[in-house]
Structures are given as structure tokens and as C-alpha cells.
Amino acid sequence: MNGEWRAAVAARESEAMAWWRRWVERESPSGDKAAIDACGREVAAAYGPLGWRAEFVAGAEGDHLILRPPAEVAGGGGTLLLGHLDTVYPLGTLARMPWREEGDRAHGPGVMDMKGGIAVAWLALRALTAAGGALPAATLLLVSDEETGSGGSRALTERLARQARAVLVLEPAAGETGKLKTARKGIANFTLRAEGRAAHAGVDYFAGANAIVELARQAVELASWSDEAQGITVNCGVIHGGTRSNVVPAEAELEVDARAWTAADLAAVETRLQRLRAVDAGVRLAVTGGVNRPPMERSPVGMALFARARAAAQAAGLELEECATGGGSDGNFTAALGIPTLDGMGVVGGGAHSPGEWAARRSLVERAAVLAGVLAG
Ligand SMILES: [Zn+2]
Image (cartoon, rainbow, N blue to C red; front, side, top):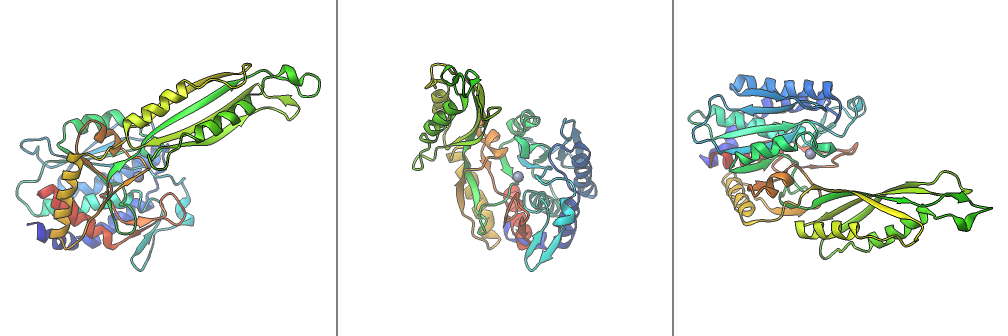
């Protein structure tokens, strides 16, 4: 059947394009519960005619949407399709970057990340449902808070992943050749806080302990832990402190984003941070934070899943490659549980999180053919 999936999904392309557009035009910025819930209802509406059952799980920043096949599929333990409803674009962005089709490119807020991935899933599941017979066991989970770190949805994602044999993540593909992602760096976020002693810069300068100077020294030290060959990065991204130029600053804060390919490397950065000592004896340092997303380490089970996707692609006349990326997704959580996870199943495009975000229209059918083939195989 594999070879026929491309024709099966192509037959429904215009239907899927119409939903894709509707979902892009239904803006759903992170944190806007009303907007995200409206988007969730509109995605659920596309599954009604397929007989799929929608369940909304309450979330503070927006409800998470679970879609299940018409009847409980025998055996269970199927595939979890994982995506998110939220985008990084504030409400009203659509007026400045409306849905627009130009040649093979579709434009609009979240067109690639990841309304396009939601459309890929719908098209694949539409074709599978239309093919009749027993549906492969699959559950679709669309969370509402991925772009802000998935704090409210992580437990739900992990619970559904534990019931699955494999997880396919609908995030955009990598690069214009549409590579799948078999490894992602883990991410840790820290705040380094310095407490010194305020003093008059003119009268009492040497009685002060400068929190900004302390953090500046620490920032240089932290940056030196980055290791290009090892793939470790320690980014000092935000720094603030002080009150006035004529006051020795008593307080300053530094926000750090650390990334690594392995849990061990990330843990090593955390340990080093905890052991930091102030250079100035008059300053006290405090570190808060920790690992936000564990690494999705390249694994034999993940690569086996990629091999299945490549075979499904070949059956549809397509070539697929894989790669590793420094960006995180909810696939980091599921891979860290040991569940085979393959990411980047969504559309191909570029300019994510920017006014120029675009997606390749042809990739909708191509990716849906691959997804249908993997699910059916
Ligand atoms: Zn995304």
C-alpha cells in the first residue's frame, strides 16, 4: 500500500490546504487562552467528519487537544503524534502578514511552525481513514504552551508517550531539503544572581562591592565553557543590575541558556555553575534554574524509526535525510523517557518565528505521504 499513499493524500490536497489556511488565520499566540481554545476547536472540527473523538484537557494558557480514532484500536500502544497549537506571533500579526500563496510558498503567522505540521497530520489521517479497514493505533496530542517551554503540558505529553510505542513530532523539517531530526540538544536555563554592597561612588567607592562587575567577570568565565567541537554552548543572554551611575550596584542578575547533546554534558555545566565562587569576597552569588528540556540523544531506536520513515518516503518517490539540531521541542521529553522519537515530520520551509516565515506547499502532500506510510507500515 505504501506506494499508493502519495496518490491517496494528493487526492485530498485542496481540502487540507483549506484547513491549513483556516488554522493560520485563526491566530493562537502562546498565553492567549481564548485564542488558543478557539484554534483548538477549529482543529477538532476538521476531525469531526472523520469520526475522530476530541478531548480537551484544561490548561492555564489554553486547553490541550487530544484526538483519537473512531473506535479504540485493538492492541493499543500505537503511535503518538505530537504537536502544538500555540505560535510566537501576537494577536493581530495576521493583518501585517496575511495568508498568502506565492508560487510554491505559503506565508502567514505559524504557517510552518506549526500549523503546517497540523495540516500534515490531518491529511495523513484523512487518507488512512478513507482507505478503510483497521486504522493504525494513533493518538494526536496538540499542546497549548510549547513555545513558552511546555511547563503546563509536559506531564500530559509524558503520560501519553509512555502508552505509545513511538512518537512522531510534527515540528517543521530541518532546512529546505526537509531533513528529519533524530537528535536535539538539551536545554538548561539558569539565573545567576549577585548581591554586593551599595555605596556612594564618590564618597565611599571602596566600601562598596560591585554586583555588576562580579557578574561581568562570571559571564566571561561562563562563555569560556562553550565548546564547539563538543557541541556545548553557554549563552549569557540577559544581564541587568544597578540603579544609578553614581551608586556602586548592590544587585545584578544574569540569565544563561546552556545546551548540550548529552545529558552528561548538560549536568556537568550545571555542576560547574553550582560551584561558582565570587571573585569579589564582598559579593554573594546564588544560582537558580536547571534543565528545562533534556537532550534527545541520537539512539538506535530513534534511528530505526528514521529508517522506517525513509522507507516510506522511498515508496512515495522521495529521498529523506536526518540531522541533529540545537533547538528543543517536546520530542526532547519523550525521547528522554526512552520512547523512540522522530522529529521534524511537519512541513518544509524557513524563517520560523519571523515576519518572513514561509512553508513549501508541495511539502504538505509529501510529508503526509511519509507520515501515512509510517503509520500504516
Ligand atoms: Zn514548533
